[in-house]
Length: 255
Ligand SMILES: C[S@@+](CC[C@H](N)C(=O)[O-])C[C@H]1O[C@@H](n2cnc3c(N)ncnc32)[C@H](O)[C@@H]1O
Image (tube, rainbow, N blue to C red; front, side):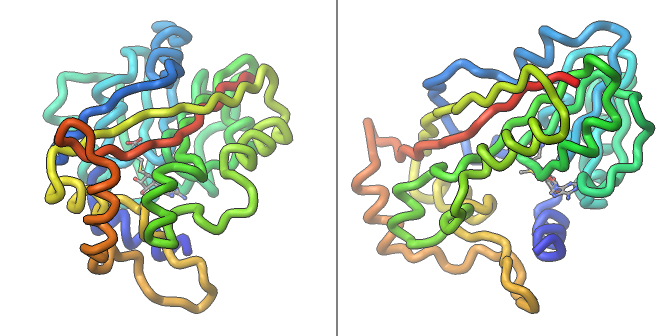
């Protein structure tokens, strides 16, 4: 599965969604960026796991002593370095690293951030200073649920336990304290079917990475069944915009 996932991210090369012109309505007010900006002091070191093309890091992370963004995709890191050059930011670097085989110094970082990526809380615990913060944002099981039900498949569709609970338990079991799990609900609106469809082709919502052993099928967004898509659109259009219900979760914790 990891191989397919890596291949998918290598082909995507960035995690930029501006071209889809999405309007977001927030129904809950937990914000990873707000917490990060609140807790960060000038002398802090931040590690951003699964940074993608560094888009969010460069836009929302506060200035401090050091920010390191890592990703297992070399293509994402290339994009991140290009984005870094275009930004006016300093004290920031990007490099390749697998979140599940972290090779950064122990007790070095004040904050570790993992936004919409895989984590191993035990490894994160080791690289945080005592008192350091862990901030996770993830996509939960019921994300885009009515769309997934219509298609009969999708990310986490067959999960027995929601990923938010798995993460929450893993963070507690790794030894963290002050662990809080918060459900995050948002509504996203798309201007038309073209933008909606292009978005669904880019993100692994309806189509997942293959988890079957010996299955060498790559991740791909096959022809999204237009009839099903039209059905979803006719049932989920409000003021001329197509609505998608997003279900995320946030976790904050301290070492
Ligand atoms: C959904 S994107 C999120 C990017 C960014 N954090 C954001 O919020 O915009 C997930 C990123 O995690 C990376 N990723 C997935 N599995 C990983 C792993 N095991 N180690 C490191 N990076 C990984 C992917 O390459 C991709 O760039």
